[in-house]
Image (cartoon, rainbow, N blue to C red):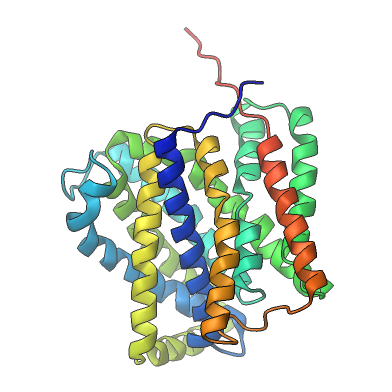
Length: 334
């Protein structure tokens, strides 16, 4: 098996993206635990999704002309782009919208360290997609890494409650990662067809538009529209909430910009290995945030046994991801 080669520039940019990714996930967690709150967790997920989705579109429109060329030298300005790029972004936006909603729902059941650990092994799902979709990876070669990653993923969110552990495992590790994996596989073509920044703008716009429609369509039959609108009004009336959400979406802009720019020249699997460092950064953000404002992320486990289990689980997660065999290029037919 060829050795995993990570270029120094990829490692540096990837680690920056990993730190920013862990930061915005921690801020998401803070928001749903301390700012946009309701006894009903689905109402919170609906409200924050809609507010955050449209905020990141505005942030991207403002930041792209200023920082776009710095993130991706291929960016020449905001343009409509080609049809292939827009369709690609539409597809990625659809799956990312569903994955984001599930993630925001799951965020309310755990702290940032636990949730980020559950989102990191997305490489497992991209590998499975390569197995069943592109037929470039044999399942028997991936069986052990898959088992190791699943065991690590379950215990990475351990908090002495089996029911909550199963909920977060199901919502975040299984469901959310599955939808995000589709984007990881297909968005590389969108970036290569134009540039990372314009693709990102189209991706965020598609996510916001499609996600909002899906939220309304699924909320209306179950009577969620009125409480969601009320929670959104309450949240938008708070200057502190608006400031935190806006700064969070700035972090999303830079994290996503760095990650997408790397996809032009580097294999997705290698990028995901570097981005798995977000798990380590998430522990730092969790302890810093809880130290500055105790209870910001809800209840943080204080048992040494729980953290020992989590750290061992993170080691299993990383081992499983590194053990995952790299997909072989599909054979071209002359």
